[in-house]
Every structure is written in structure tokens, then in C-alpha cells.
Amino acid sequence: MSDDDAIQAREALRADIARLANGDRAALESIYRATSAKLFGICLRILGDDREAEDALQEVYVDLWKRADRYDPARASPISWLACMARNRAVDRLRAGGKVRAGAVAEEAASDVADGELPADAKLELDERDAGIRHCLGKLEDRQGSAIQRAFFGGATYVQLAEEDAVPLSTVKSRVHRGLAALKKCIERL
Amino acid sequence: MTDPIAPPTELSDQETLAAELVLGLLDGEDLLRARGMLARDPAFAADVARWEEHFAPLLENWDDQAPPPAVWDRIDAATAPTAALPAPVTDLDGLRKSRDRWRMIGGFSVAAAAALAVVIATGPIMQQTSPPVTTAEAPLLAANIPIGDTPLRLALTYVPGRDELSVSSAGLTPDGVHDHELWLIDRQGDLHSLGVIAPGGEARFAVAPDLSDEFGDGTRLVLTREPLGGKPADADAGPVVAEGAFQAI
Image 1 (cartoon, rainbow over the protein chains, first blue to last red):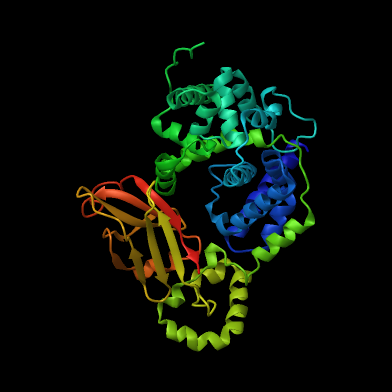
Image 2 (cartoon, helix red, strand yellow):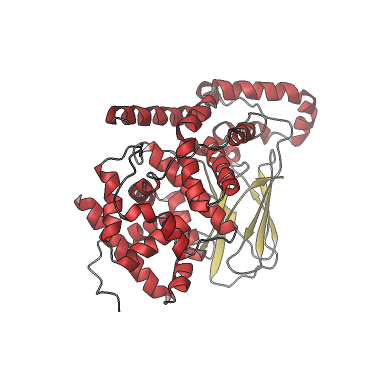
């Protein structure tokens, strides 16, 4: 997908979300066609189970139908917003099922993140800033990066991270806080 | 190995909390507090959106996977006009009158549903005028809000058309220092006070008529801890100690 195509796709998606927020239900199908493979990929990767991922995907679009008016184009790109919705739904399901994935699995889910290489077929708006988070996450001290990734991809809370790493809660928190501060600094420098 | 000395952090507490919310690290009261802030503090909501924007690209380089066609069928069915009303066109306004009137109109539910379909199909223009169109079987709304780590629950019931919310807080005891105030989060994320809970009793809160159309299935509620008597007019709302949502019953 060329840059122009990506920009057009993004604008079309933005317009569809605005239509949906105004009650135009036809826009939902259009959004689904444009984004469901991406979002299903996210759900599947996080949940590791077809059935669960399908249920999560359904929740994402039903939720979108009800809350499209929450989307603020000034704050987020539409695909980022939807990707986060899918991730949040998937993680909620992981937790509801008591299946928060242990460190090894979550890091495997994140494995193609740290090396900064994008798959050749990556189709979505991957500009320099997008590659930035991967670069910056890769630069963090190992334990900081690991904690942040296990939370984001595996749904681990502070309490679970502390248990997994067998360290006090305060240690995990300070690791994450320092990781976040370094991450922000790195992203802003790019 | 010990952790290296912390570099000077350039994150404010609020930015850190926003990142923690995005990453899903919080639980318990911290989570409720962050959600409460997300609902009512635009600056915090902007921080949350910024972190989401930072992290989202991590989700975007995985392989696409086409979901089975059945998933769309289920979404289509779940969002069909007769199944679930989208928030923007849910209109409980017309229900402000007595329920008896709706029993009378019950016979015309097919016509009402058809009219509703028109509202949805025509979208924004019809929304502006908010015609008092709804299904005859507008449901009662109930919410059951667990309070902290206690086995206690706040039970709420809202009868559309009566502008009245009944609140049961059986088992709750006053601590002599705090009161708890119940809030509705509207579709814009703003908080509206519904009243101060009288511990251990049954109470009925009158609902302002212009708020009644915010009551619907899924409407979120939060409980904050306040000084005795409820939130002072010149202060921000206190910490969120519990939250829940209405369900149609």
C-alpha cells in the first residue's frame, strides 16, 4: 500500500466512524470490511484461541456501534483507536477467563516487536513514529521492557508481574515507571 | 543485580497513571480512580489517548487474519435496529410520561418499531428533533454495584417514565466521616450527581428530567467518597470507590 493509499484508507475510515456516530448503521459494515482482518489478527494473537478471538471481535464491533461517538479524530488515528479497542477486549477476555498468559507466552506474542523489523506485508500506516515505539521499547532495560510488554500483550497487572518475577510490588512499579519515563523521552526525541 | 538508579522522571503522576491505565496494569481502587478520571477529566483523557497512540503501532504489525463470515452475521444481528439501540438514538425521553400510557400504546409496538427503524435509517436529522419514539417494552434498568472488597452491594433500580431511582444500600454503615455520592456518566463522559447515599437504607432519588434520556442499558455509574453531605460545590469529586453499569431487565 502506498502512502497515498494509506492516507486515503485512513480518511475513509475516519469518515465511516463519523457516519456511524451519527447513527448510519451501513457504515459499520464498511468499517468491518476495512478493519476486521487487522483486528481479528490482534485478538487471535493475544488470545491464542479462535473461538475466544471471534467473540472478542464481535464485542469490538458491537461496542463500536454503541460508542462510535467517543472517537475523537483530533486525538487518535482511527486504526490506532480500533486496534486499542481490540487489544482491550482481548485482554479483558484473557482476564475474565482467568487466562492471563504467563510471561513466556506473552513475550512470544510480542516477539516480533523488539527487533524493529516490520513484516514485508505490513499494510497499515507505518510511518517513522510507528516504528519508533518498537525502537524505543527495544532500548529499555530488559526488565523494564519485559514488564511493559507482558502488561500490554499479556494482560498482566502489577500484582501479577510482581508474582511472576517474585519481587515486591514496589519494585515492579518503579521498574515500569522508569521504563515509561524513558519510553516517553525516547519517543519524543524521534 | 539491583535496579539502576532511577533517571529523573519526566512523567507527571497523571501521565504515569494514564500509561498504567492503557497498559492495564491497575486494579482495585487505582483502576476505579483512573476510570473515573478518564470519564470526567479531559486532560487525563488526552493523556490516555496519547499513550494509546504510542502503543497502538505495536498491534499493527501482526499478520492480518480474516475472521470467519459467521462473525459478521452475529455482529449484524446484534446491531440490528430491533435488537439493540445504539446510544445516540436511544430515546427514553418519551418515556417520561406514565408507564400506563405505554401499556396503552403497547398494541402499536410494531408501528413503533417501524418508526424507530426510520429514526435509525435517517440518522442525524431525526436525532436533532428527538421524536418521542420508542419500543413499548422499554425495560427497567438495574445495577448492582459491589463496594470495594466488601460483600456489600448497592442495588439500583430505575423505572423509565417515573424519573425516579430507587437505591438500596442495605448493610452499609456510616463511618461518621464520609458520605458516598452516586454519579451517572453521560455519553460525553460527564458526571451528573444522582444523590448522596443514605447508608443502610432504601432511598428514592428524583431524576432531573433533562437527565432521563441518559439512562439506558450500559449507562455507567460511579460512586465517590465525599465529605459528609456530599461533594462541596467548590471542590472536585472525591475518589471513585465503586462503579457499575445499568442493565436492562
